[in-house]
Amino acid sequence: MELENNGMSLPQEQPQEVPQEWGVEESCRQLTGYLESILKDPAQARLDTARLCQPCRGLGEALGSFHTLAEELADYSVRLSKGDLSQAVPESGSGLYSGLKNLHANLKHLTWQAGQVTKGDYSQHVSHLGEFSNVFNDMIQQLREREAQLKQEVMRAQRRAEIIDSYTEMLVEMLDQRNEWMLVVDQTTREIIHCNKHSRDGGEGGAFCDTCDHRLPIQPKLLEWEGTERYQVWEIEGEKSGCYRVISFPIEWKGRSCCIHIVMDVTSEKMRARHLNDEIYQDGDTGVRNRQFLDEFMGQVLRERRDATLCYLDLEGVGDINTFYGRKVGDAYIQNFVEIVRKNFRSGDTFARVKDDKFCLILTGNVKHLIERKLREILTAFQRDDERVFSHRCNFRYSIVEVEGEINVRTLEKLLEEAESAINRQKRKKQKKQKKSSMMDFEDW
Image 1 (cartoon, rainbow, N blue to C red):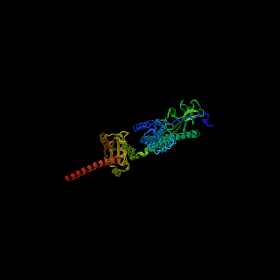
Image 2: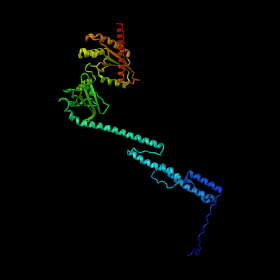
Image 3: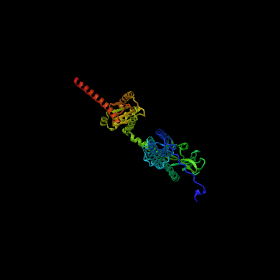
Image 4: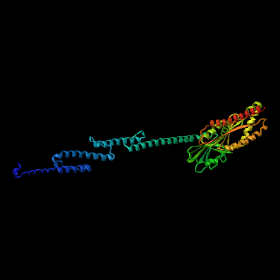
């Protein structure tokens, strides 16, 4: 049934009003405002391109495309600034994205590198990020050095722990059967709670080592010991108690904080070492130092640039005395000379035999004038005592060389050569004078 038959009819559709088109001036004004809105807040920018005049509509459509690009660029940069690196990189080929795309790629790679560093990979190197690259690379270098330092400290701690653990396991079993002392001292009460040489009557409460048949003379010093190192080797030497080498380290002993002292009597070892040292550096015929000692002593003086005075002594007539009187008399002649020199100088001064009849005297400081006076006195005494040995005129020549440590560049060999050259000049001068005197005597005859 049709609607007309019922007396009803559909409302007529009202025609839509077409917006009035802007003029050129108004269109330019709208375009300018639209561009400013895009630059300030792309989400709020609006433009009705249908109302633009025909010449401006192309520009309006271009600004609409720019509006879409700006909204996408703003959203991308905001998410990137918040650390969202999982978002997809915009596919737009616009040059406005190039810098952010590079930053996005660098940040993703930097995140991966940081993860590698946390895993201990310090070979990572950051570039293309300016000052940040330098700071990051410096941080990696410091982490690398710190790790190496920590590894060394861990290795040292492990070595010390291994040493202590091995001693803890073996000491009680082994040292009870050896000659060394092993004392366990409570670090709080300072009492001995174990000694491997205690008497059978020994026990707790300080009885250890008080009644011990092998009582240790240095026991009080062991009780006072407070070592700063975890493992320490030290020595105690006294005039009457002998010399002892001690190995000390802390340990947990039956629930108590203690330290263990392993004590070895090295008195005989030290005496043998001193005797051997004397034999190496001593001239067997005269008892003074030998050339080896002089080399080492002067080497140290020259290295430390100390001031010193070297006196070179040339004993005359030894060869003639050996020829005419025998070697024993020659040795007595040398020994007499040595004793007179030693009596006139301090025991701390270095007196050494360089050759058979050549000697060297070293004094600290530049004291040339004092040595010259002393040597004149020695020469007078030496010549006065000649009848006590044999009928032969005693004599020696000497040359003095001062060593100014700060500016000295001469070696010991050069110093000895300089001193010996001075003595040789004295001898040639004397020979020349004697020859001239002989010629004058011959002319007078």
